[in-house]
Length: 318
Image (cartoon, rainbow, N blue to C red; front, side, top):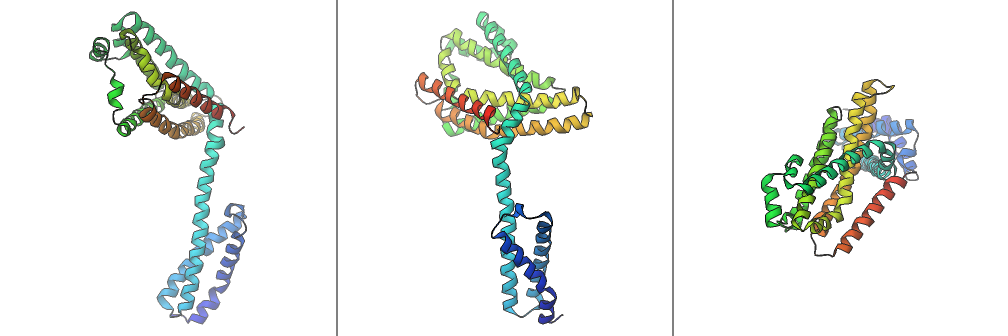
């Protein structure tokens, strides 16, 4: 066991250097330090923490233990607070610039998903409007069709009787649809196109059934408040899936692995950006859409949320 004086003499320059770096951090941020200073800080912090363990085990000098303990606590707080601040900054930068920039860079894929969805939604609506049985081709259960047409069942009202439960179910379903649209992109993009087409056709058919039954405006009024954000997220997820599929089928001048790596990064950013948007859509659908508000209010909410969303996507981060 080495003497306390020898231990202090041997290590004090390291501790003094740590104090100098911590004093420097009192006036600046960790990320503004030179790369070598950051590496030195991490190295000296670990060494000092080891010295503290040695001092506790071998030294009987409480002043030395307290000094090292305080020094390690200060360094730990600076390092990990800086990491937390860096994570917050990256998250803020992602939503302020990264997500909308990725949307604009890849808008063609999202537009393709929107076009496929809209085309099949129109087909499902027009076909079902002329013949209710056409809805079966859009994936609508015949029993559900009969309940809508014959009993004028407003199924969305029972779903939202308990708002918190309804909002949770709705968000879960939306996330599942987004996941399918994104994950099926690995099937050369064909799976994503199928998800877009199937969802578009079913929504169009359901709307047509309710209009045939005479209460289509009620369903449309319920849907419109949250629908702009919700459908936009589904289109973005479809765009993400098509990015994956295009990297596999049409890598361009890049090697297929490089194209997949690049476009997968954009796809993941699109999905990540949709998460808070889906939460917002679920809250509106669970709490605002079923509320006894007039159609004017709900359509106003749809217009305002749509303007806010696309102003953000088109203008933020320029």
